Amino acid sequence: MTQKQKESGKFIVFGARGRVGRAVVAEARARGYEVTEAGRGDGDVPSAADVARLAAGHDVAVAAVYDMGAVPGAFFPAAARALAAGLPEAGVRRLVSVGLASVLPTESGALLMDTPGYPQEWREFYVGHAAGTEALRAAAPAGLDWAVLSPAGDFTAEEDPRDGYAFAAADAEARITNADFARAVLDEALSPTVHHVHAGVTAS
Image 1 (tube, rainbow, N blue to C red):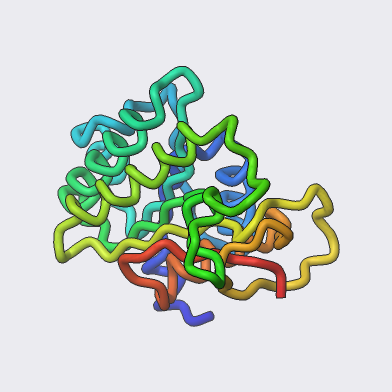
Image 2 (cartoon, rainbow, N blue to C red; image 1 turned 180 degrees about the vertical axis):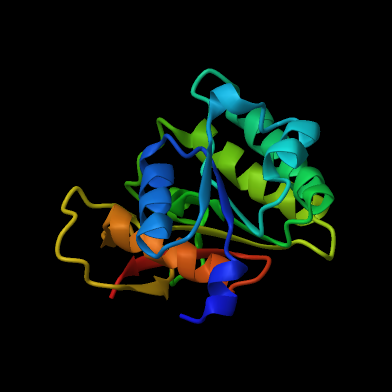
């Protein structure tokens, strides 16, 4: 990793106190990067003004936000629009947002949430996440290079060993550790290969 890469890697993590956010913060700091942790008490992510204020002076943003008290179909699109407006104002050019496997296509082309036997009790949450990605796609200006990453299936409680990761279609049986998923997020934030799409990540 070159000194130039290090100098261009000041991170802000929205949702830094959640499970994924904590893993991303830990991975970034383990690599020697400066990280700002932004949680609910620091500002309102559905506010473009708060996003711009918090993100000023940073190079890269990671968003792993949710609000259990909000309507998913309202919260996730509002958060996406706030990030799409506020980050460019702050000079941030790369955003990696954390999504859900439920709304990823499987190998057959069907969305995971539409496959037989997939749990439906949280469908409102799934659909809200999908609406957030579509809102980001519609609202992001050309100068904001964004990607949405999610596990291809789910997280595993087993954190060791760190087996690495690969991009994959949705698969209900796929698993990845929080640490390996955080590695994928950091790698994509620093050296982007995924652009303007939602991609699934699984253990390799």
